[in-house]
Length: 432
Ligand SMILES: [Zn+2]
Figure 1 (cartoon, helix red, strand yellow):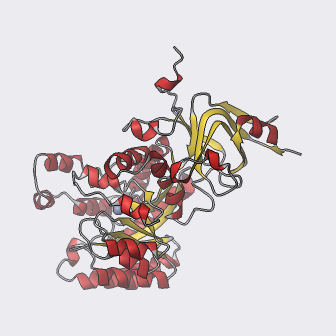
Figure 2 (cartoon, rainbow, N blue to C red):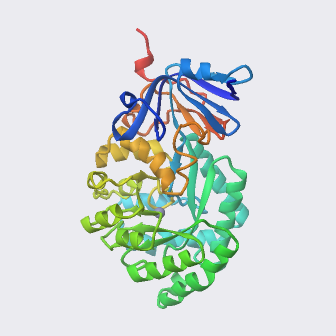
Figure 3 (cartoon, rainbow, N blue to C red):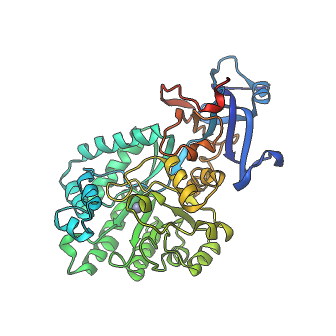
């Protein structure tokens, strides 16, 4: 007897996904991507029950009660997973953006009240309700860009009460919003102003008070640290992450972003699930990651937006066998974009990743960076039914038409949760 489907998307020009199950090798593209033409996908409840050629899927499932979506000329891909975001903040920083364009230095901007310190000040002043309403709006935009799962960090509170406030906002969002949210505690984002001449007290506060409270109240899965010269040193980061591990939080690291600081090596040493940024990773750092299970998460949006030149050496990482992931780093200071397709475009144009590698990095590898590789990030029977229907007939057009949004429909756990209303298709579909 065939399996009853609740929703079927059929006759898609293309379905693309990385794939662990049985697949014809002839269907596999570079970067481990499986590509099926004239494809369909069927789901029952929140799970995928069939993926393949339209004819094979329609034969395999009972479609009598299913909602059927005709996707002629469109393509299907896994819902994007964004494994590094800072979505809970009180205000955007567009004035500071303009000051930077006009040549003001980081110091001048900080003096004028800008920078991360302004985000901390405003997040502390804001009510939980205000922060939640704003973050919910940002989550809506993630969804409109095709992202169905995100990691979300605290880090603009930097006091016991304010870090807990931000994490409670993240928890409420996780419960209320269709975008799945995986929480990370980032009390070690910056040394707050009031601790500038006694930084060791702040580190003790993170270790002795914040971490036990976060763990006890089950407010986070991961603990992240900004390991960088003038922020948290290698040794300070190590102390914090070792304590995190002890209280049951999984380490993550902002590593080697602006300078080489052995952040990747530290990630391997403390058993981090991911090491993020890595624009300045050394060859030793790449070797350390290659002999560990740490996922490198690259954030080209931050390099691009800050007008920097040095992107992570992704070809070296891929040559070393590393499962590179991409993320937006969505935050008000250095990367105010929620678009994974835009990150794919930057990865292709600035780092020379192929479109297939960029897609796998935005789905399967991104899921691995937040411990969700067994249920999201791939279109395979038994996986959660999280996918996007795109207004392009070839996935390569996603990074090619950079800065555009081709998301037509988003399906999360088997439900249609976003419809664009657009009818824009690429030229390949116009029959002359
Ligand atoms: Zn970040």
